[in-house]
Amino acid sequence: MVYELRIYQCMPNKLPAVLARFQSLTLKVWERHGIEPVGFWTTMIGESHMRLFYMLRWESLAEREAKWPAAAADPEYVAGRNASEADGPLVQSVSNQILSPTVFSKLR
Image (cartoon, rainbow, N blue to C red; front, side, top):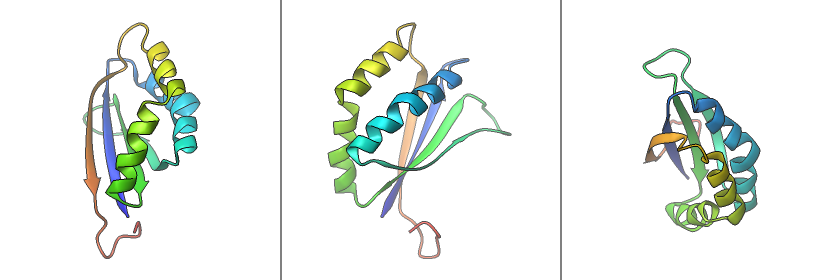
């Protein structure tokens, strides 16, 4: 099992639109493609209130390599993403890390 931590730095005042897109579009597409989110977080106290953090669970890197591009190219997702960005991009930058749980982690 591996986990992917992704951090979206949203454009100013666009975090609500990013959250709405995840809730109404992205999660539905991911479910269809078998992508399993672990959780989503926003900053309550910290350096930036315009970030979305989320984690995905993968059985292996091979699973990620097969499912992630398919979901990103899904016609419903592409159309929805494009529509949500009609007035400009919602996300300034994305970082991601593939993480391996320690032997004492509850998430294994």
